[in-house]
Image (cartoon, rainbow, N blue to C red; front, side):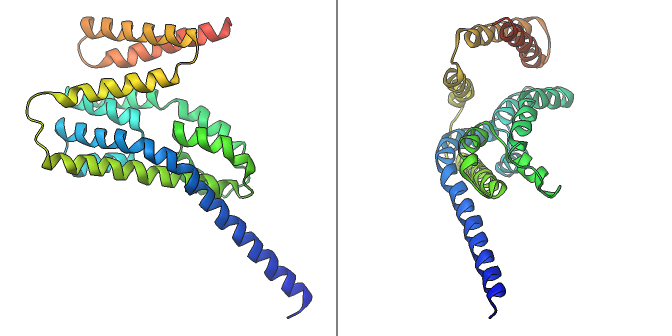
Length: 242
């Protein structure tokens, strides 16, 4: 073997090891996310079935949508008979922040083949973005790291949703309405965990009051969308004056 050929082989071996290590790093980084998804995903699966979806439909929803908060709100809107347009609009608004998340992440994932971006974009969640951005700077093969991170989190969410959905078939919740408290409780916990300033408390309280007001004065499920939009304007106004 010539010296140039040997150098090329060594270079390829090192490159492969780096790629494999970055993939493994992504899987390891996703473990805390998966552990956090397990109870929420199972609760989503149980709620979806209790609201009229089949276990397969609930699982497929996680497979093709992969947006926990939007899925949880959607099943409530589906159960209440909301119009398709309202559900689509709500999903768009709830996930609108992903445009900002993907734009920020794209600064670390430049010069990739075009076909990579739809897959990487689909795997972005609040949790994968937060973990990925804190560790991606230390990775040589950044897109491989984030892909393994997002894919592991995705599989964790789908698996936990499926477990919860199919588990519901073996558990009789009856008509006690116990699961009705799961969705509000989960969102309250998620909200409290994300609040870090007085302005966020004001926006959260304002949004809650608006949602209740619109629910009492407007027919349908538009209260969530209207409250979200108006509260967002308030948040932008407060941020601009700080």
